[in-house]
Image (cartoon, rainbow, N blue to C red; front, side, top):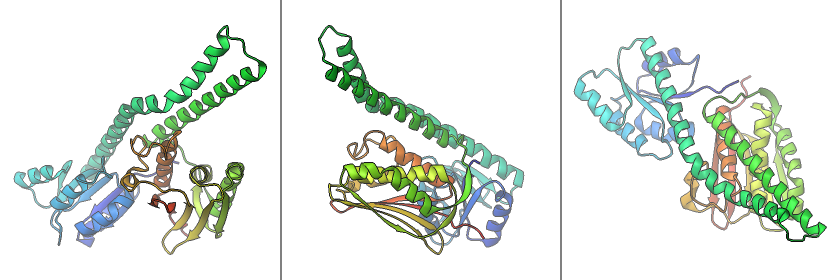
Length: 354
């Protein structure tokens, strides 16, 4: 099962919203906003692929809303199609100048609307993959240098004429093996992330208790927690969700692993599952040093340059993958952190329809 692309419909007329929803609901995940202010309030969390944006609205009009979306670095590739009864060339040009990708005049033909949406979804996907590829070289150059050195140098030593005792040979072989495993895991994550961002990753959704998945994930990192003298506390409710159990468990495991790594000996990590009126929560909280404020907005970006220490060993890819998994579940993943006071990651998932 592949996730649906997301479209944000912005119009102050309920009838217009209903018309667009009827045309798009079968193939896309939809959200509606009735003003520019509401759009700006929900767009980062919803992370739409395409915005269908009316121009004439009370408060912030469509042009200004478009400009503000384009100025938001958290929405680099979102496509904006203005949908308006304004048909003059000057008005279209004003929309393009504000940052719109295209313009659709009301009343529109449903076939044209669907065709434009498909075109811009393909374009967005191509742009994202091209950006991903262009960043891969620099990323892999940084992430692979240390493990490659830890393979090449021990092998050179083993192949040299330098006499080595059995213990030293064993240490060299262990270092080579650990570094090779690290590279293998890194490339697995790169391939997985690229497939997810290209929409070519298959998810297998089933009904499951989130608390069971969290318990299993915690068991898989228990040895690391014990080694680092970190306690994992559970605050679990029985919560039923429609999820890909393998992917959600992997996300929780990665979040716990990171929380343990950045906890002090004797520290405590809390993992929780709870149900809210409109969504489900999975939280992982640590008592570590926290994340630099300037880096928080980029913590889920796979190829960022900031806070490399906090997200070394490919963990930036784990967080980027976690975001893709959350999106595929029509959910979100957020982070809250304060220097010196720890960090909380929260995965929000939709309620099961009954």
